[in-house]
Image (cartoon, rainbow, N blue to C red):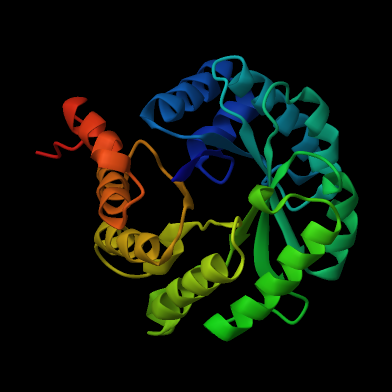
Length: 267
């Protein structure tokens, strides 16, 4: 399971303050904590600072990369900002979050991705809007994956996000999402699927319970990546258990390792 640590996001007040104050220690501490908790990539987002987004992203990436070898997930809707910060990301290739079938985003971001070794999140959204059904998601995913592969992006570098929508607004959004996961993973061998899982519980009580249950359901359908808080020991434990039960953890080595490290004791 690829884990993208979501905590260095300027929509969080402590991160926005750290960016504004140039508080390197806070950024480094959170990056390192996510690394040690099991994140495979560290998400970096400075989207609330629209006029200085590229400048702030460069500063964040430099601080993150000074304390961890884990690559960053560069989270920005602005292709110009993404292109501007790629030069400061040394080491393993980062992930770009994200491309979609929206014409402007596709046309401006595709040249940055073509022929390189960047990983990319491919959002199942087009100029027609957000899909609601599994069928609609699959049609967009098909166009995204084939379009990216035709432009020399390896299929194993593509992380399709079928988009999680709040269950409180439509009772079928959970099942339509996980059915889309299964069809994408079965239909496009080698591709990955990813999501920002917590949207499913927006507006409902006991959100963590819903998120944990939904994670298990999605993993059973093939989800192999998630953008989450890796410091949440319970969701990380749920992932370890679900991965073992689905047969992705040979001889349950990762599950047993987590147990021995005391990571599965929630007291």
